[in-house]
Amino acid sequence: MFGILLLLAFNTGKLQANLNSHPAQLNPAISESRVIESETCQSGPVHQFDLWDIEGHKVNKLLYFQTKAILKNARNEGKPIGLTSTFRPCAEQVSLRKANCGGDTSLPAESCNPPTEKPGESLHNYGMAMDFKCDDSPIFEKSTCYTWLKENASKYKLQQRAEEPWHWSFTGR
Image 1 (cartoon, helix red, strand yellow):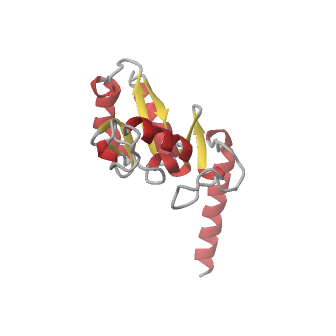
Image 2 (cartoon, helix red, strand yellow):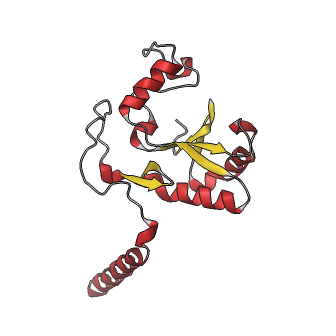
């Protein structure tokens, strides 16, 4: 029992030392621990500390390291990849639904152009989805970045939403 406790204490110390040695790599967008007030359309709260900044975009901390690695690795291979949309507040989702669904916000997502989830049902409302862009093509599905993502996304446990080549998440929704 003492050996297990000693091993646990040693490993916890190593983890803490590792976290302390790389604080610049962790970029919480906002360090306050409060629920985002405007997100009443969601079934669960998003806290400010759940969203971390990557190049001016907020992503959920659960997606942060994959996103950083994708951007770094694709760019290292000469792919000019970037982000266009990550965390999206409820008000922005409402606005997109109105614009993309011809003003009829009751339509299913697939009836909108492009497909647009109802507020609270979009993974963007939780910072759990990201839309990519590629500077080498205005049409993402024809870009070198899209080809790279299709070939490499499984390494990062990401899936594409079938109707939206630019939209990636853990679930493909």
